[in-house]
Image (tube, rainbow, N blue to C red; front, side, top):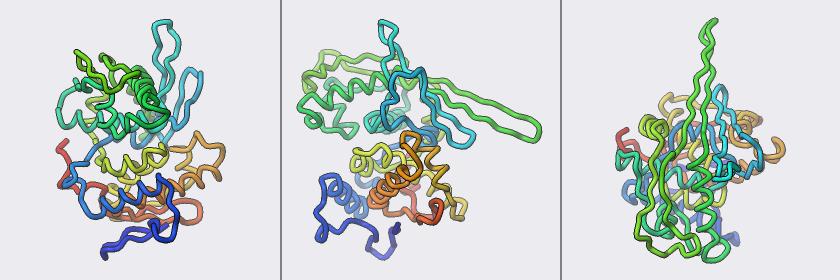
Length: 321
């Protein structure tokens, strides 16, 4: 894997003259060029994710009809329990790229407005554009609209729990936080007609614990990169995590080794084995490198080395938290 340089040229990106690019590759390349030329603050493209949801993330695929789903990162565990419908049946788990894009948007808006109540607008199509989705692609005019509406309900009604175990000498501490992203809200949209305006605006009320987590430790990233990577939830996860880890490594001034096995435990439990995860992760990281010019990372035997690099968003551009 190559890294971005400070000489005015970038290494390790697609060569549009030598390759026949797919639509996704072209979108990634074009976003990388734009990000390289225009900082996020100038492009008004800064967004955020709560630090806890960078360290442990949502499922990539539908876990199916199970009572709970979990992911572990060291001494931190994320557990998700789905909400129930009016018949006390599971609504299902939030999974894939859509709830991730929604969470980035929610975090940004909470920081901007300093309010738990967020207005979502009077049309579903308008909200889809806000989070980086096209309301008129993905299985016809209503394909993505229905999918977004479904994933919003799964995300907002689920209970998300963080558990952490710490040991200090002979003492052992177990801490936990159970929360909902949005325990209250109203949807007035019509997924059959996403452009139709409603007499009433849709809104949500962020959970107090989620709101406090957002304000305490937001991780800044570039929305242009998210939109370029949106076809891959793994690429979205790795981009946000590498932005966070690069910032921490740069603060400490010392490179960090991350083993593939640890990375799979953190992000890749949806994948069949370590070999399959490594192949998918390496492909995703190549895309991340294209839209993250300041990333400095090496692939060595057994894992990755993250070196001090430039943050995804310049420190002076970040919102005060």
